[in-house]
Each structure stands twice: as structure tokens, then as C-alpha cells.
Image 1 (cartoon, rainbow, N blue to C red):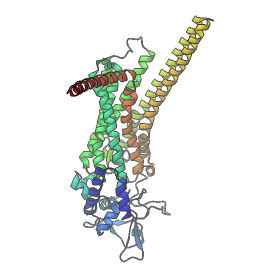
Image 2 (image 1 turned 135 degrees about the vertical axis):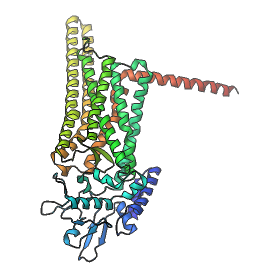
Image 3 (image 1 turned 180 degrees about the horizontal axis):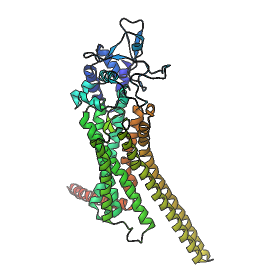
Image 4 (image 1 turned 120 degrees about the vertical axis):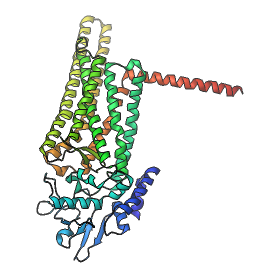
Length: 491
């Protein structure tokens, strides 16, 4: 009872608390655990360790349902048509739901696919039947689009992990909700200002506006994840999975390509300001926008044509490319996509911004030395030269910090997820846990939340237009209020 109260206190908002109550109640009634009392099911759904005696055995069967490690060591499950989980009366079955200590034989089980092997038919059926007994599949069918054939989409690697605690789902749902609200608001503000202010429709801002559009679409797929998290799994089924995966691949790759185009645009503006062939124009900016969307569409559509597929990952509430697939075509696709969406853009962005820093530093140094030669030995000019030198250093430092922030933001946002994909392709699957795949995905979404503030809202011209427009709105509101106030005062 005390644990139940702690769980309810962890759900801070009233709406989330009601959702948690409803889900937990339905989970207790619909999860379909065979031969368990309703109270035992409720305890399991809340993350409480379940311990029950086995009939006809010398010991007891300890079942820790909510560990962070996969099930271990010598489990043999006999699949039957009516009861999804029947435990054999021998020592192997007694260890089926052990808490995860490694066995002396090298921590291998019939279900362990961490080395890239695929379970045989009987083991695969046992895995899926165990999944149906431990996860609230009936809850998903009642409140979503889930069907039993959805199991065919799940990579066997994820099946031998136990369900996460419900509180983990609710925490992620709350974080995604906050990121979505802040990110959509910031990106929508950028799009609104671009459409309303003609002075902002420069070639560079066309690219920034495109980044805001792609980030908006990336964030607008989050309701799928939030809904799934509320119902503790893939409640929206295959349709939600394919839509989430395709939108994530399209908008994420487009955002990356747009960031590279913004870096190239700034590179040409700073290093080649007087060369007509390299000066950015609106036509070239629009061409870069089309290229970015085509670039993203190519890679995001390839899984739909058999070069890979969109599958659930981590807590099974989100979907992405199958970086755990065993076939060579899928592995090659992940490696090519990693090169095209991470290595090339990162090298491109780093080169452009480092070149910009060097060019600004050289230009400022040349200007300072020329000023010193012109003023000669006049003491009154030395002070002016000293001030210019200090201003130059401040400008260089500010630019270096901006460049460092942009490159670091890109690196921190996309590198963790790229590392997870590489671990899956390289065969180091023991390191790819559900939590290890969910946290990097959150970093990618947070980048879309931060982008409008880094590339647009902090820009001086954008801030001036924003202040001017809101000042006009304030004057209009103040004028109406003043008239009303004067009238009421006269009365």
C-alpha cells in the first residue's frame, strides 16, 4: 500500500495522475497474466517485485519483473496455446525469471540475441508469448490500434528485456511534452516573423525558416510517443510506428542538411563577399531548401522499399531505423546513412565555422595593424587604436563562443544516437539497452527545441523586428486601454 501511495505522489499533475490511475486499473484487469491473482497483477504493473511459490517444486520461483537487465541463464519456456507462460518443473525453469546474475556458462540463454544470433522457431515463439504475458497488450488493443502481428516488427533483442517501470514512461512523456511545447512555440515564432516581416526574407533567413519548418514537423510527431507512453507501450500499433519512424527520418535528416547549408551560406558571406558567383541569393537559398528535403526524403523512404525498416526501439513507444538487423543490406544502409547524416555534415559544419573564425581573426588583425601605422606616434590616436584592439578581441571571442556553441550543440544532439546505431551494427548489443536508446533520442528532440533560439531569436535583426512588432501591439493595446480608462474616469 505504501508503494502504491508513492507511485501516485510521483505523478505531479492532476491530469497525469488520472491517466496513471486509469492505465494502472486497466492494466490490472486487461494485461492477461495467466494464473495470477488480481492483486499480484497490480503489484507487477506498479513495479513491485513478485514472489510466489511453485507447485510441485522444492523451492520458490522469484520473479523480478522490473529490472534494467535482460533475463539470464538457462531459461526454458514451453509455449502452449492457452497459457502463454508455463514454467517447467525443473531447475532450469526455476531460473527463468531470475534477477539477472550471470551464469557460469558465459551468460548465454536460448533467447540471448546480443551476439547477433537469431533465436530458433521455438525460442522465438517462447519470447513472443512471454512478451504477451508481461506487457499490457490487451490495454493497447482496448485504447489504441495495437494488433498481435505487431510482434513481427519488434527486433528479438528488445523482447528479452522486461517492461520498464510505469513511472519511466510517465517521466519521458512529461519531458517530451515540455520539449514539444517550447520547441513548437519557438519555431512557430520564427515562421510567423519570417512571413510577416519583409526585411527578414534574406537568403540566409530562408534557410533558417526552413530549419524551423523541419523542426516543427519533427516535434509534431511527439503526440504519438506521448500517447504510447501513457499506455505503457506501442498502443498506436504499426500505423503509429511507421508514421513516427518516417517523420523522424525525413525531418531529422532535413534539419541536418539545412544546418550544413546554413554553415555554407555563412562561409561564403564572410570569405567571399565580393564574388558574384559565391554570393548567396534567394534562388540559391531555395535550391538549398529543395535539396535538403530531397536529401531527407531519399534516406527516409529507403526503409519503405526494403533497404531497412522502421521498427520499435527501447521502451517500444518510439520507432526508428532497424540498426539491430542482421541482414547485410540493412547493415550497409545504416553505415551509409551514418556517413551521410553524421560524418559528412559534422565535417562540413566544422570546416565552415573554423574557416569563418580564422577569416574574421585575420581581417581584424590586418585592420588593427593598418590603423596603428596610419596614426604614427600621435598619443591621442593610440587610445583609439587600443580601444579598437580591445573591441576586436571581444568580437573574436564572441564569435568563437558562438561557433563553439553551434558545433557543440550539433555534436551533443546527434552523436549519442549515432553511437547507439553503430553499437547495434557492430554487434555490441549488450550495451544497447532500452534506456540507452531512449535518452539519445530525447537529445535529438531537444536540438529542435533549441535551434530557433540559436539561429534566429538571438539574431540582432530578428530581435529588432520582434521588439518593433510587439511594441506596436503594446501601443495598440495601450491606446485602446487609455480610451476606455478615460471614458470610465469621466463617468
